[in-house]
Image (cartoon, rainbow, N blue to C red):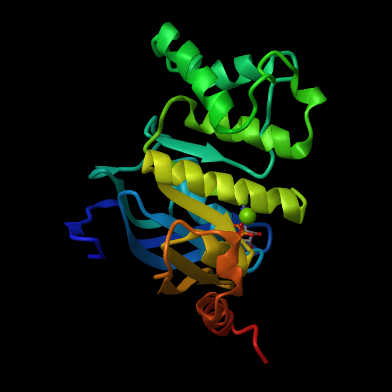
Length: 261
Ligand SMILES: Nc1ncnc2c1ncn2[C@@H]1O[C@H](COP(=O)(O)OP(=O)(O)O)[C@@H](O)[C@H]1O
Ligand SMILES: [Mg+2]
């Protein structure tokens, strides 16, 4: 159990001995090997590791999109078997419907879940504001840059107000400046909404900058090499990247991954 301030935190997600074996043309492939962890409510967790180490596989299992081969997984005390309305997922590219306006794209999850219409109308306006897209509600996806599309994706992720946000390299396709801006916005939103975030990245610096704890994964078979606590002050600003404590954590993860020679 981890302590934050004077309050005991509660575990919202528990994974025990999670293993995933894919059957492939060349035989079984162990994508995840015996992974166990707990995630506290309101925590910001990053999964970091090289390409192919099983980050997306683990996130898909957490989101109920993929079945595990062995092990146990629960969210809020319930076994995960299918996608849950209290978990929202976001990917590297947000698939937006080109014939719907930005506002209509953000309203889609609420419509699918048949949430109260007037609440959703109000919420959509608040979300457009929150992600910095005021004035863009009536525009269409094709009129937006990649960074703005991911802002729409972020607003849509929040539309039905899920408690847990699972994000698979959500800003990975953006240029470095835009990615940095989006990371700061994500932190601001996370601090305001107290969501639990699980954020997949192969960028070690990004993982340290954002997270309370970093889950370090190594490939073949995908194992959880260790969990590093990032006990650096919040709210975080880009100044942190000049702090020697930041570099220490980055190098600790590099050491865990075996990338320093
Ligand atoms: N549907 C699948 N069928 C077979 N092998 C897969 C499938 N999805 C992923 N893999 C394999 O599992 C391993 C982990 O993949 P993935 O979770 O996508 O890694 P990451 O997201 O860390 O890059 C890789 O070796 C990949 O080729
Ligand atoms: Mg991946």
